[in-house]
Length: 107
Image (tube, rainbow, N blue to C red; front, side, top):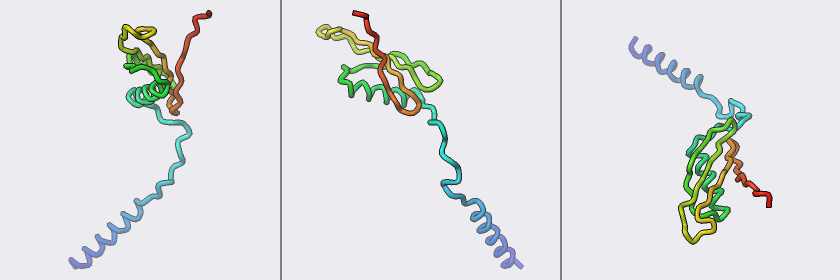
């Protein structure tokens, strides 16, 4: 009786394990990219500015947008620099695209 009960419970355990198994592709891929957090957006923005040969810039502020982040960076003061302190405004989208917003003074 005890052997039959243990065989039955082992069979039920195997059946339950097989029934719970699923293929990794059972769900379709997400149609939209997952939202970035502020740390991920900062990493992408800092890497972008480094590629642009910008002096070391520190994150000054991060504003969450519906499709990413608006990041403001400021460089440390350098008396010999032209200008001595730079500001950069960077848009980081949830899909990983990054661009810098530049303003023209109209001259």
